[in-house]
Image 1 (cartoon, helix red, strand yellow):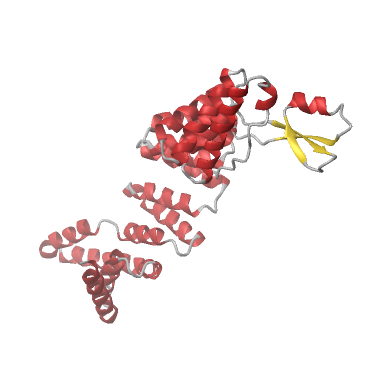
Image 2 (tube, rainbow, N blue to C red):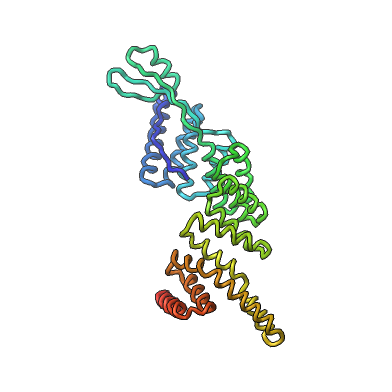
Length: 341
């Protein structure tokens, strides 16, 4: 989520509500309380105060949704997902973009540049006391609205609602990488693996250097024995792009070794009745472990205190008959187990 930058004071209130001193006082007090709370990172207090500013302005004929936006941001930072979701949904449905035109002019006497509402700015143009009249348009926050609301809904495990917002956002911003990532996450969390794999492949076609997406693709491919070779290739691509990718090495090792318990049971079954077939399976198993060895060593190098990496490496050294290294890993395993107690 983007960091909030809240430095806008209520500039127009003194002009719009020229005779409404009580309203102006309420606005200024609420705005100050909101800003103070935000600056103190007390987002739970800042959020309703910004909403109070918005409602005061709206009651007096000025529907300035920037303050609703600030309220939503603060609710999100306060992890109040329900309130943040309500506000972001309302902002998106209203068509809010956050684009504003700022009107500035310089006071010739003081040399200070200030921001004014449009009516006052136009009036000041007639005065000889002001110069350097400029307008500046703020950037749109609409993509951020979709990104943040998608995050809120995904965090709340509301995957169907998240997908609806993501697809609506992608219709407007088809090249938004974050929304594409969120779409993949939503498909994954909802158990729609086929669409998840499809979106991963689409993203990798656009950005083949994304190690995380190669890893995620490998994870999904590894769930199906028929695509084990594809999973192996995906994990290899992930660690090629990110050489310290411990999870990539771990999953690559598991993919290469396969269902070892099943293989051992099959070997034991054949030992007495078909010893030659059992021998072939033993050699094939040893070959798989030899193939996995360098990746297991890289996994251990990336995470030397991961007991899973140590135990796996110990087993591989045992099967590949490297007694010295097996003993080293056995000692390391005992050390880690002792520390864990």
